[in-house]
Length: 161
Image (cartoon, rainbow, N blue to C red; front, side, top):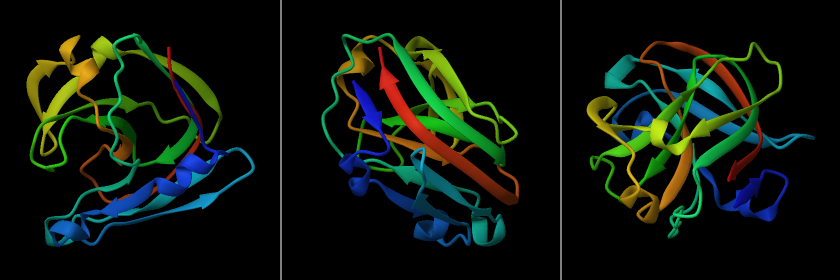
């Protein structure tokens, strides 16, 4: 399963900032020649600290896949790839931090079993399981550091293998 950011599916993706909880962080997206650029500024004011770029809610059965491949480049605040199993924000989700590339394109492969469970940004001590592969309802990217600053994250594609 591949999500190509030059495809029409990305029209359904949206930015969600911490303003939903009173924060002042801001993020935005723009189409590029390679895909989509998600950029902005993370603010810790008003208990803020994140901005995210998330896909639509759907049922994604990842049972046939063991790996995630992402082609991206980034700089500034680190970003994580996140998978949700519930529409409620306080239900634990799974994520993996993506290394900063100092604005150079990289294609990186991650094992799905390396994803860790987080609840409201805090590690729960649990990892992704085979059962979780059948429960994914949303993918997305979220800033992954609780610090103020600017970031740029450009995505070409994500693919499950």
